[in-house]
Amino acid sequence: MALISLEDLEGLDDEQLDDDITDNPEPMDEDERDRLLAHWQAVASTHQVSVPPEMTGPIQEMTRNSQQREPLPFASISRHEKMGEVLYEERLYPAGNWACVTRREDLYEQSISMGFMKLMRFICKENSAGRYLGMTVPVISNVHMMEDGNTFEKDVETAFFLPAEFQSSPPQSYDPDITIVYREPVRIIARTFFGTTTEETVGRQIHLLWEILGIRDDLRRDQYVVAVYENPGVSRRRNEIWFIHRDL
Image (tube, rainbow, N blue to C red; front, top):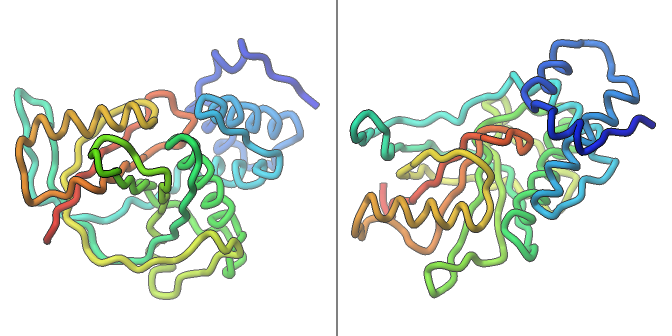
């Protein structure tokens, strides 16, 4: 089995790793599989999560198809800028079917990591369709706040919008923890940020957006959404914090 050192990982560019694999249509050999799994294990360790060897197949499938991601459709209502910087955008997302899983771990980042690994297996053939379903972006996490308004509840739901091909007839998961949920349209305010998504960084973004918006009674304070557009291995990945309107 090939070994990879910490020095190798520090110099390993995630986008280059993806390119190396997606540009090569041949099946991965053992060294390539080990290299890819080691990369994901190193990334997961920053969230205090381990990636089991049985995730090798889903990781390989997701990496090969990383350039084929279907964006979640939405209608832009307004954009608010200051000195050329987009402060936030208001959007309307349509109704549709979502694959959802809830985890209750000690840390927020552990919950989203464990939830996403379950969704990866569902996307990669562990479903009633028996095939790779395709990926949509962003993957979202629903965060509920405790009564103090600052502390995250332990239960965190991670979800992805089913691709258009499967919206009318959603495949079912073999994992009882994953449910298909139909959700009504939702109106949100979104602000972009970059980097990792931990309870600390997400909490900071929530506070920052409230400072920008000021007092707003039309937005919920008991629930927020974190939207992630790139895979967990990207060090400066694009994310958004979403505030949810009480009404459309």
